Length: 155
Length: 332
Image (spheres, each protein chain N blue to C red):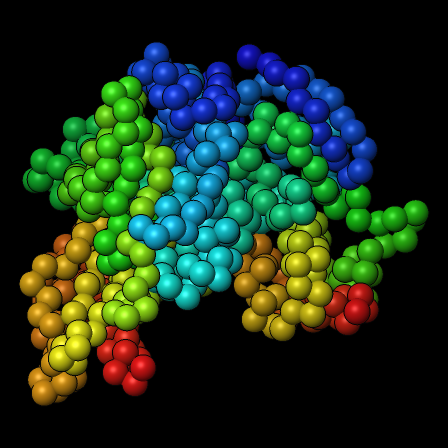
């Protein structure tokens, strides 16, 4: 069965008919062509598909699109404003927080949720907020450094 | 894990009554709240349902209320809300710690307390892809007729792995359940069976709607803690999880309640825990406690860690928490 959902994605309103079993990650990638959100484990274990739902980081591969009716979704594509990278994007770039880049959209969205709630997180808070995001390249050191640097830049 | 999501019809009731009615009309229907357990299991072909009933839009399930009789937490309150609530952290610390230990932050933002109580039991022969299980001849829990963990046994040994249940058990929690005949309340331990494939004592058309915790009494405070041991620091289930609560009487005697998850098919309260008297000597008391817990847990080969390791782990965690709480409560 399909149902009509109305939601906001990166500040723009959308209205779509979606199948009941459509996952949010597939809706974003296939229907909206927002392929910045990655599919990693596809089972809620790696965090690559993390997006913000009403400002809170959530894995989109274990979220039904139908349950996002009326909510605000933010993806990596909405982070740069007027061609300028967000503080986190810039910081990941400058601090080598990205290697292969596959986990980066999820990392940045999880870190974005953290910095909105806690603009000056200590390392424990950063580790905890990124606890659901796996990276197989960096060893996390540069990622944590990137988030710290972005927090400094924001405050 | 990239099997497509199987087709189903989703209904979104707005009240508990509508949800019960929907379950009653669809005996094969399954409830979905946060979906963190169910969706992953559906994609592995572990749950076959053509009808999902999404209870996340039912407002009353999201209510949390501190009253004279205690704390009522609606079944739809998320684990994130629970571990961020300052009152729960202060008065029922084991519950906040257990919530904080579940999966990763993204899961906790979606997962609910009711969902965690109903979380499916786990086993290395069960939480696998369809082709893996099929090539192994399936198992007692799903479409098979043998338990690969205990082939001579006649029941499923999958381990209950929810973190919240033991913390709620040591705080004397009651569960409120709604069904076609109205609501009923049971002690949380009565919610579970020691059977991995039939671990919940809920009728197919019943829904957990709330948990009720006794009021915090500042004159006789209960201190508590929860800790789990797992393979990795986040997004992992407990190899063993232990909750301990401690109440001091006027005479200085301390009464401990200890509950365990991750080792058996049901979370359970440890039996025959004797009260602690300072004269007993803490080390002797903890040594006896270790023996008691090792005798009562029964971990099986359901995880990649050895069963004996999990037995020792449960005992070590219980000792650590008991020591901490006994020292804390005596200094307080």
